[in-house]
Image 1 (cartoon, rainbow, N blue to C red):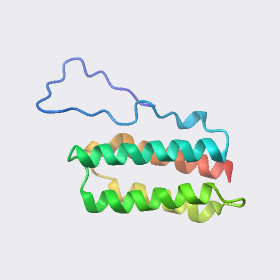
Image 2: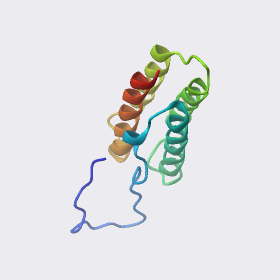
Image 3: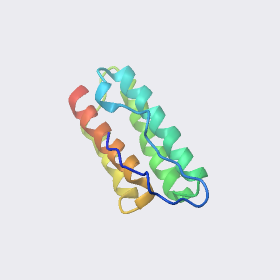
Image 4: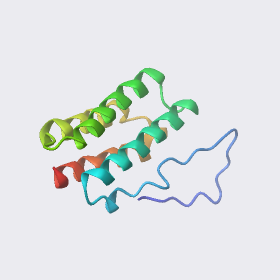
Length: 117
């Protein structure tokens, strides 16, 4: 996980640092992947509630991640379509500066899918 020195930062309003407790590197099986993906869904919700992510885009990203969660629970998950869904979710939020950590998490989740499925 990337970390930043924020000691001289000036913040007005609420600050939300997404992804602090999500460790995709620890994912060893499809059950732990589903758990991490559900944590990513919570992060998406937090970003949306904080006004950092557009509701329409948030819904699209959530839908794609939920499909991956469902796929991870199948006996034989489809690696290609599942990785594609995460890549599509990531592309929806690329360029949104407040979603940088979420973009990284989705990239790492894509790699986990390729490794596990």
